[in-house]
Length: 426
Image (cartoon, rainbow, N blue to C red):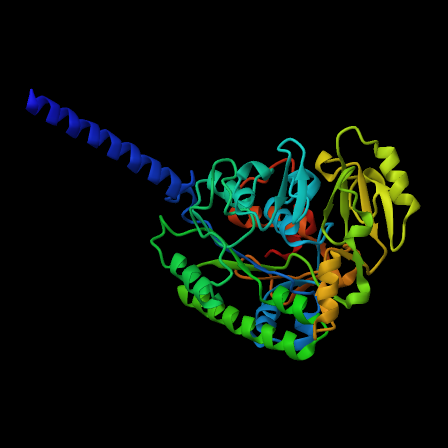
């Protein structure tokens, strides 16, 4: 009897161990393929790199040598046009999905989700990693469906279990991770055996956004310093790719540009707040109004309209700056748009700015038609022409271009159009 109980205990322990191992495996794999399907082994490679806040004119103004050489031997658009609001998270996810925010659902760095009765905020790790906030099919999920191994070092959406999947290899965001570490890891991925080697790698660098916000985009000394350091890190990546001998295509993009601002550009958010009657979700260049309870939309509209000063209030479907008629309910029924060049901030933040020794700084989020909001599109590799330029393009058109290079299907419901970009291909 004693031996039987001991046998039962061992069997139970084995079952628990197997369950635990399976659970850990699922968590590690994230539902993504871990080996390339034989049908994709001969496909090329794409590295999509986001240089956050890299304004369209920085290369022409400051001539970073590695990027200049990269562009001369590849292709460029005059600029990359963001979607509204020209903020980090919605625009990265538009690049990743080929969709406008109205469709992919990531409306801003902050927005209110009616079904969840919750605010999505980029600083909230729980919601950032919740895949149910993210609609569309991001490029790494589409590549996974084609049987491709994928990888990411910090790209918006890759930390979330979208459709139950992460990239095959990915990291949770840590701003302390150096550029050298990111580049080194990307090159290690390219050195993996072909069955394990990712055909799609996405990467993210924040250098130019950090410098632009702190000093403003016209501060030549500090912008040049940040740019040349980033350029050096990218040069290390470019040389490593060349030495790999693999057919790697590199696409450099940015989510938005940067606008030079002073404290005179700031409006107190408190002037449009009424917490008893509605929730005001601010992305600086747009404040979305969400009535509480039975408070009338019409009455709130009239209230805000009557006190307009430095801003205008609109019913959502009549709001300016959008490239489409916004219909996603999570925008809320009303939008408060500051006058051109103005930006909402808390009174506390404004006072802090007034006391700061740094009198000029950078902002973004504004109307995409403002050239200062434009980012970059540069590409180089065997799939691309050499020394070729095109006019400005919208960031939603990058997704179908990547699908074309990788030889994977383009989802039918995206907003992007391959015809806008395919002329850059050989």
